[in-house]
Amino acid sequence: MRIRPYEVTDARLLAELLQRSVLELGPRHYTPAQVRAWASVLPGPDRVHRLAEARMTLVAVDPREQPLAYGDLEASGHLDFLYCAPEAAGTGVARALYEALEAHARSTRLVRVFTEASAGAQGLFVRSGFRTIVRRELSIAGVSIHNFAMEKLL
Image 1: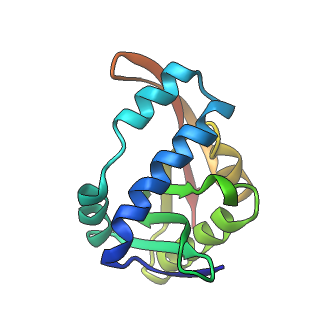
Image 2: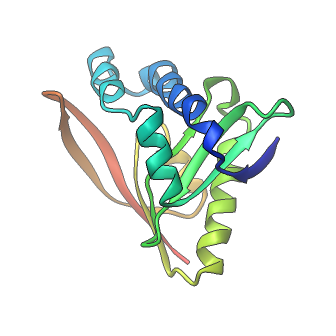
Image 3: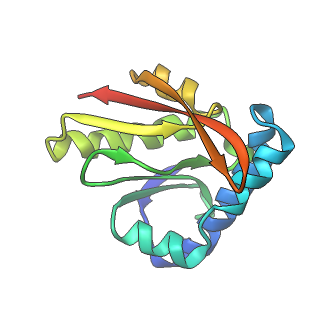
């Protein structure tokens, strides 16, 4: 596994990774209706590209350059995306990717990183030193779903 900056040619594969992650890993923590609602608002390749170009976006790839995970960090310290391919879940790839994003945050002198973590990602963030601020109740496409506002002071 190697972590590298986002490349334009990654957009389609990252959009697919997002969908697979939510559809295959989401059911561990959310109902089928919640998973469908969440998947319905995920960005497609064009939006993935626009977001990735505007942020520090890193991609963990396998030896064949296939994405295993990706994450991004906004200049404010907001970590918006950190998604892992189902086949890489639990292998440490997402943790390594987060650590690379945190190193970038520190290098730019950010004092805080914050995110809205899914129930599945909350544990990774807690193990990485984040604290849970509040459980947030949301409505996506009319379906109630929750995530967790979390932060880490650097």
